[in-house]
Amino acid sequence: MAVSDEDKALAGRLTRISPLVWRLTAPNAGIMTGPGTNTYIVGSKKVAVIDPGPDNPEHHAAIKKMLSDNGLELGWIMPTHTHMDHSPLATTLKNNIGGQLAGMRAPDIITQDQTFVPDINLQHGDTITADDFTLEVIHTPGHASNHLCFLLKEEQLLFTGDHIMEGSTVVIGPPDGNMKAYLASLELLHDYALEQIAPAHGDLLSHPHKVADSIIQHRLKRENKAKAALTQLGSGALDQLVPIAYDDVDPRLYPVAAFSLKAHLDKLVEDGFAGVELITEEAKEVAIWKLVG
Image (tube, rainbow, N blue to C red):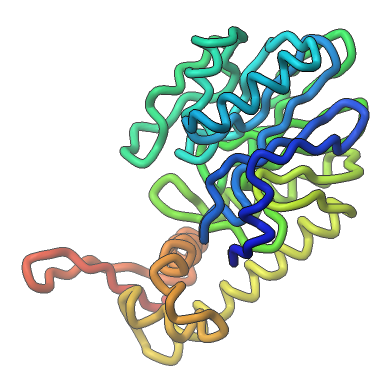
C-alpha cells in the first residue's frame, strides 16, 4: 500500500463518518498500514472503540481528548484482531480510561499482541449492545485466525479491520493466515445486509458484496498464476515461484508477496492440486511445491 504525504496528514484527524461513528487515524502510516490504523468510536453515550491501534502516546491522548470533549463513556475496547497495529493500545486505554476489553485472545505467535487479554471473549454471533447501537460479531478468519468483523446493525456498516482494506489487497501470512479460510470468510459476508465497509486502513467502501466478490476473483486469479508458475517450473521454492506468480508486482514487494503466495500454495495442497516436500539446503529446511498429477 503506497503512502503519500496526504496519507500521513490524516494522523490525528477526527472525522464524523455517520450519525453513530467517528473515525480517528493513528500516526502509523507505512507500506503495510497505508494512511495508518483507523480507530472507530461508535455510539453517542456509552461507546465502543474499535481497533484502538498501536500503543502510541499521541494516539492515546487523541482518543482520550475526543471522549472527554464529547462527554462519552468508554464501555468497550474491541480490536478486530491482535496484530501489532490494531490491539496494543487496548490495555493502556482500559487502565487509564476504563472500559472492558472485548475480542479474541492472540494465538501463541511472537508477532501477535500477547498483552491483549479480553474481559469478554467474543464468539461468532455475539452482540455488544448499548442504548443506541448494537454490534454483531462476525468471525472472519483468514488474515488472522482470531479476526473479527463488527456489524453496526443500525447503519448496516461493517467494520472489517484487515479483512477488507481500501486501496490494497490483504496479506495472508501463514501459519496463522489461511487463504482457504479467508475466501470462505469473504463469502460469509453475503449472509448479511450491508450498506458500507469501514476498513482499518483507508476510506469507506460502498457496495460491500461487490467488493467482497471482486477480492475473491482477484485471489482466484492469483491462485491460477501460482498454478501456472508450478506448471512452468515443474516444481519450485517460494523465491523461484514469486517472480512468476507476481510478475505484475514491484519486485521490491516480493518479500511481502511471498507470504500470500505461500498461503495460496498451502490452499492448493489442501485442495489436492499440489504437494509439498521439505528438503535440506545449507543446513536449513526449504519447502518445494509441485503440482499433483
